[in-house]
Every structure is written in structure tokens, then in C-alpha cells.
Image (cartoon, rainbow, N blue to C red; front, side):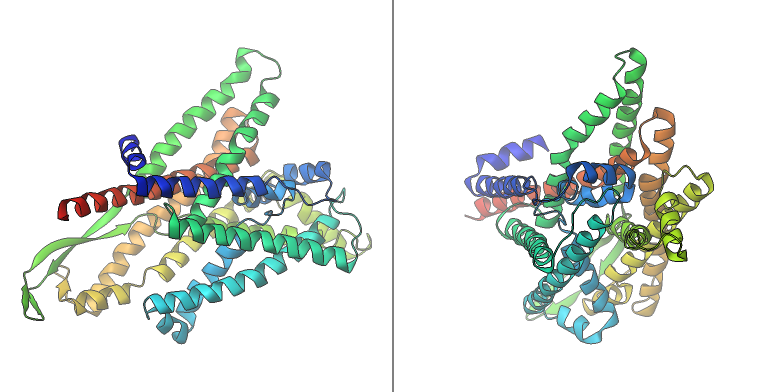
Length: 441
């Protein structure tokens, strides 16, 4: 990996791409530290210390949400818009046909995703203004309609700017722009988070105070190794191509394989699960100003006090984490089924005179691929649930580090390792392409 990076820096074209990507990411970190005036930083810190899943949303914004900066919403509206458009390709036959129209169809769907991002961003920004006004203590004071519209416009513009940054990186830089912005946010806030935990746990200065960090470090190293293995793990389905005629040429038969990734869904199921699990808390915060003797005020107060992964109510904590695991598990199957259409793959194999040895083309091939995908997706779903729910709780009990910080640690390592692997693969691909070009010339 280091050798590939050194070789890339030596080539002017790749060096310029790397510098361009780095410059955009520095701009993102600069805007993430520009806070919107009027927000109480002490109240923000109190809210984020008590809400673990809100901390996960802050993770995707690179710490911008906990500072209430102009990029507080991060890429969340754009990610949600992209996921919705992917769902629409399954629901709507018209959109599915457009998605198959090549570059022109892709541009149309991207344009619709941008419009949807603006709408979702404005709605989410309004929700944050209401949420931050109804916390105790209140993060935002009383707002008139003009001040509220100003905040909504600034937050929405911040998301649109990050969307533009991501597209610039994808087009002119190295790697996937959206993933790299999330990656930069996690890396940018990592040192401060680690330093805060270290300062809180090592106040005594004794050797016993450093044992939790040794345990956490060993778990982090082991977790990183496991994530690398699972992210790169594929099930290779053998493919045999029959001899066929293309124009006036005879294409000889050849053997290849179809790689099926174990973790095909990536971190998208985690984002889905976070959104669903955080929804009751968001709704409960709308009723903090309601009359105390009403049933909905009492229900909202109970949700705020008990619906959390680290609540003192043990049965509720078990229920909460079980639901979080099940949602992550279920969304893994759901998203994999949407993004990997076995019928389309089987049709493509048949169209190009390819087949799986021992399996008839057409419907039997689709059924076989579906059966294989179900088995390997089970492993991927268990892996995501283990990394995001079970491992943080187990490590927290052993080391004594806050459960919320462990939640952030597991998800952060998963994202950082996955993005780093994908970016290095793209860099190595670019190097190979350059070598072939030089050989042809």
C-alpha cells in the first residue's frame, strides 16, 4: 500500500488528483469548525453526552452537528436521497428503465437525487431547530420565523456544498467523494475524542487507569484486522463463457468467476438502523413544552429517559440493543436485495452466452445466486450487528469505557477501514492503467 502511494506521488497526474482531494477535504474541515451563532455549546455538549445515537449522526458530519456548524447535517440528506432513489428503481418501473439508459439515465437520476437532497435537507434542518429549542437546557433560544428560515437556509446550503465537494472529488480526485468526506470527518474528530476519554480515565495517574486503554487498543487492532478480512471477503462463483461470434470475430470460450461480496451493503444498514432507532427520541423532544399532566408529555419523558442503549433500566437497555441489532440485520438483507438483482445478473449472463457450470441459464441461475447470496448475506448481517452492537457493549463492560464512545469507535473503524481499502484499490487501478498506457505507447 505504501509503495503504491509513493508511486502515485511520483506521477504528476495522480499527484495532482491526490492534492486536489486533500485540498477539498481541508476545506470541509474548515467549514465544520464555523459554528452558527446563537447556539449554547454547553447545552449541546450535555445533549450529545446523553444521546448515543445522536453521537453517531455527529460522527457522519465530522463533529459538525455537536458544534452546530454550517455543515452540521453533513452528507446525511444526500445519503438518504440516494437511498430513496435506489428504492424507487425497485418500486417504479419507469425509474428502473431510466437507470438502464447508460450515462444519460445516470445523470437524470443524479439530478433528481440533488433535488430530493434539498427537500430532505430543509426538512431535517427544520427538525433540528425544533429539537434544539425543546431540549433541557435549551440549545437555541426563542426564534422568529426569519431567524428560523436563516438557520434552515444555512444548514441546507452547507449540505449542498458538501454534496458538490463530494462530486468534485469523485470527478477530479481519487476515491468516492461522499465516502472520503465522511472519512475525513471521522479522522478529524478522532484525536479530540480519544484525548477527552484519555483525560477523563487517567486522572489518577496510576497504572490501573491505563489498563482500559490497553484493552481498547487491543480490541481496536483485532477489530481492524477482522473488518479488513470481511470487507475483502468474496464468494467466487465460477462462470464459463461459451464460444460466440462478435461481428466477424470468433470469441473463444473462457473461464472466469463472479465475485459476491460478503458485506455487500457496506455501512448503509447502520445508517438505516440509526434513523429508525433515533426517531422515537426526536418525536419525544417535540413534547418537552407540553402540559406536564398530559399522557403524551409523560410518554415523551419516559422515552427520553429509557429509550437509549446505555439507560439504567436494564430490561429496556436489553430491548433497545436487541432492536438495534435486528434492524441492522434486517436492513442488511433489505439493501442487498435492492442493490443486487439476481434476475438481472442471470439475464446478463444468458445474454453474453455465459453460464454457471452445472446450473441451467435463466431462472435456475437466478435461484442459485439468490440461495448463495442469502447464505453469505447472513454472515455479513451478523458481522455488522456484532461490530455495531455486541462488541461495543462487551468491550465497554471489560474496559470500563463509556458505551456511547464504544458505539462510535466500532462504527468509525468500520467506515475508516472500508473507505481506505476502496480508495487504495482505486489508486492501484489507476497505477495499472498508467502502466498499460506507457506499454502501448
